[in-house]
Length: 257
Image (tube, rainbow, N blue to C red; front, side):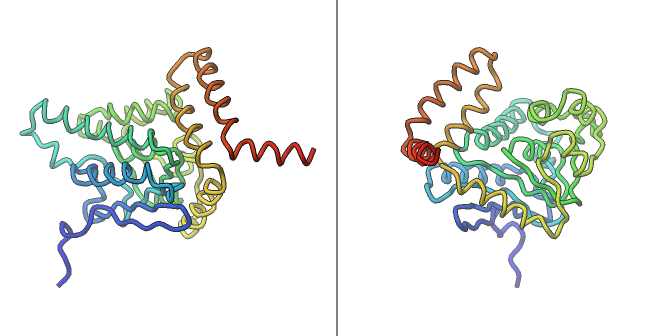
């Protein structure tokens, strides 16, 4: 007898050539961000953060949907405001875990990403989508403005593009998502894994210390004024230039000059 869906792991994982693939594994529920899914994903990301064998993380999903957002059953009418505050705080912590992750996190989007699922794509460092993928922040259709997804969207899209998605709840296709800045690349469905592999390999070939320092600085400087951003960046770059790998790379370059 086949195991019930609840007996299956929330995440399926494999690691190959420095790339950790984490796959959301609730296709029958459109890979919603249930409490169990958020706990499993955040826990595995925290483990990977200190694993030198993990250079890139690819977040993908099984089934037709990438992620349909929050589990509406866990947001039921009987929930108190305090319960809901705690739920959204846990989701926020997951999203911030992705941003704080020393390794780049790539979203591999094969299908629909809605509400907090669209937020998840926006919070990943990079995103590659199949032509069949679609995106929406559709809470407004239920009378619920997608306020927490708005934080991620407004840091990827222009204000007007983000607000149009938030105010209408309408779907956009993968080509529109790329044009608006939500994703990096759109490829035919059959080329999705090949494109992910190519992008991951390019990152794995680079210095992990430089990438970790640079990723952290990139997000920090976005939230401050330009003068403070340059000050922070200068400090990080000065330290980065003393890394063994950077010194070796500079020495190789100057020898060729």
